[in-house]
Image (tube, rainbow, N blue to C red; front, side, top):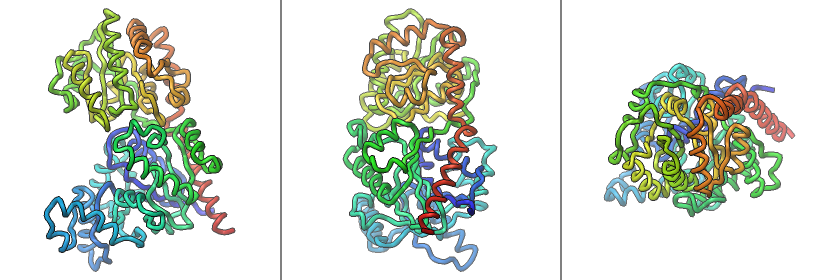
Length: 490
């Protein structure tokens, strides 16, 4: 069998440091190292309408056309037709995207706009991969090709609200596999197998924790249903997520598999002095709470840590209540370090965090790169993972890889991902979590019970390293491509 070619939708790479964007960057790099066929990335991002693609007549026109695409992507602005351009700014913005979708109805997205990596290397690296991958990996992007579509991913996603007959198609016939990070708005060519990396069904199962829940749940649900109807193969990041998906689509069992989330190799123990720690805390202080910030971290303080976007299902309000209670219960000096960007529905969490920062109990940072995050994990006395609902929860595994003991809420995903390498508490019981924080604060970090947790944590984190998961992904790609070829041949 010829080695399968793979086209990866890189839309999520334009987003933040952690979670889905982080794993997608790691997966694309991993795919480039595998013994498979040609690899390409679909570099169309969140919002844009590129100028109409025309066959370039010269090298200058070719570069100029690509530059226009990247400008449209980077600035979310583009040249609009003259009639629309004459409208006032706000009305122009309201009309442009619906007009773009209407103008492209019935036309598949073509892959004839290739981004020349030799010219636009800095854009490809800095916009898509730099937030996660180390500089030494930069050369790998020259082993792949990169394409853009005219309409852009987000506009294609908006079309999920329209009847299925209007679903945006993509001309993928030159590729054996189309890989999507989360559900996809696209319908691929018949000879192309679709692989969907599925992270969670929370827009459907926990809508009360999601921002703009109605459109979010509807678009997620419709894309999920259509991907299922089109025969896509789903690869869940944990077994509880697979079970949730099969509750929705029980007949799809043969097309739903679990491959755990990927841990970046850059997570490993790296301690530093208190001065360096204080410098990181000052430099990365969150704009949401920096005005309330007081003082630096002292060496004698037990630093507990939580890492995740600040939103309802992450359970920060219960964590804040428990930590404040723990500080009243114990004479041991403790501080809580929160590494979190404010997310949807986080107004109450931000207010509470600002008050605790003002009281000197909490440090709040955001936008922390891996090189600094591993230092924070390594210096934490323990890491708390308090979520009420998760698809995987990277923070506990990252903490284990850096040698930090983990306290985790007792939810199925945490039990599956962390195993015996964490201690568990009731996510709804503030008193229980406070008592556990006090107990951990009274124990030495690298010996006894916490030392044992550290050793088990190193072994648990190894399950999610690239060397452990790369064979599973390579086998999955080869298997799904072969099955699709057999269907086409038969």
